Every structure is written in structure tokens, then in C-alpha cells.
Image (tube, rainbow, N blue to C red):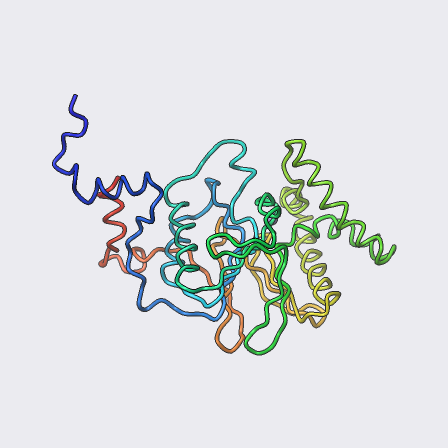
Length: 298
Ligand SMILES: [Mn+2]
């Protein structure tokens, strides 16, 4: 009868609801003046658009961490999950807006697509809202290390067949990379999902242990092959920093299971950041204003 007959029709809650519908940035949380500022931040495997992703932890992470350069290293949006049923809550919008806002405020944001967001690979070389899309990148650290930035799915088939590929030599390795890319492009055209060896190996726990080792080895070898000092990748949702045969291997992890990111400090040092809490949980006495406005809007 009088669905709009609330005292709040012109109030802030109504305004926020309208702004949200219009897709505007309604996250009014003041940027934390005490936010940690890094030289570089690396995020991967956020899987926006899937129910499993930890939006609250990630939003909290983005509120409390800043960087001159932010690399988004693939599987940022889960295109395959979205295909089989649309799931896109406001919190996932807020994450995208937070990232775009960091770009507006002067951070360099580079997006290197993965297999779950391979649709973005069609836009390599373009810039959207200040975000550069690249197939892979080379990042130089403050202390002069050159790091290959790549999601890592490209090497699934190489990892699976590491032994006989090594036996056959370079051409077989290049051939396997080519097959993996085109086989999955074909699957995509035919409406099938990406065939991921890592996902398959996880089902067979014993193989998964071997698989992680083989993946790390393969990516480290790829860095050496490209004449850089190391690699920063994602894909297997397993954060780590280690040296393999003289190459620095850094895996970012994910914001689905482990909730990790990689930071590069001002001196070029890398660190794994674990972020499995929100500000409220860390300081229950001080509720954040954004939470209150969100509740008011709900
Ligand atoms: Mn992946």
C-alpha cells in the first residue's frame, strides 16, 4: 500500500541503497591513516563470483594495506562459476571498487589473468579504469631482483608430464605449453570448464603433494629459462617463499582457503601476509563505521 512510507525515505540509508543500485562506491570507510604502505602488493586467486571466497577478510585487508604497485595475478573473477549461476553480492562489488579506487588514487594496478578469468586474456595490452591488463609481467624489486609475474595455469600440462618432457627436450616443452593453451581455449569455445591438473591432483591427496613440488620446480625453471631471478605466481592456492635451484619461487596463495597475499617491503624483501580476521574481530570494542552503515542500509 505505502511501501515507501518510512521516515527514512530521504535519509542516509535510502540514499545509500539508491547509490548501491546505481553501482556507486558506497563504502565510506575512511582510509585507515595507519594503513601499512608497501612498495608492492600481490594478490591472486580471489575467485570473486564464487561463494567460497572470503569477501570480509579481503575487504578488511584492502582497507588496511596500501602499495605503490598492486599486481592481481589471476583468478580474480571466477568466470566459470558465474557461468553456472550468477552470484555477485555487494561485498564483491565493494572489492572491485576498492581496487579501482586505489588505481584512481595513484597506485599502479596490473591485472594478469588466470584460467578462471581467461576471458580477460582477450584484453591484454589494454587499460580499464587505470588497470593495465597483461599476459605476464616482469617486476623489478627495490633491490634489483627481476621477477616473472604469471598466474601459472599455463604450466599445468608441463607439470603433469615433467619427466618425459624433460627427456624429449625444449621443443616438447614449448609444444606442451601450446597444447595446454589451445586445448583449454577449445574447451571454452565448446562451453566446458578449464581442465586443471591442480584441481584434479587435489582430489588425489597423495598426488597433490608431488604436484605442488613439481609445480614449484617447473615455475622456478621457467624463471631461469627467461633469464630472471624468480617467479611470483598463484593458481595452486599454496602461499610460499623459497629458493629452488637458485631461483626465488613466490606463490601468493588465495583468498578462498588460506587468505594470503604477498608484500614487497621498501627494501625489496618479500613477506607472506595472512589475513583471516576483520578489524572488528581484532578490536571488538571499536566497531567500524562502515559496518554500521551497511547494517543501516540492509
Ligand atoms: Mn588458476
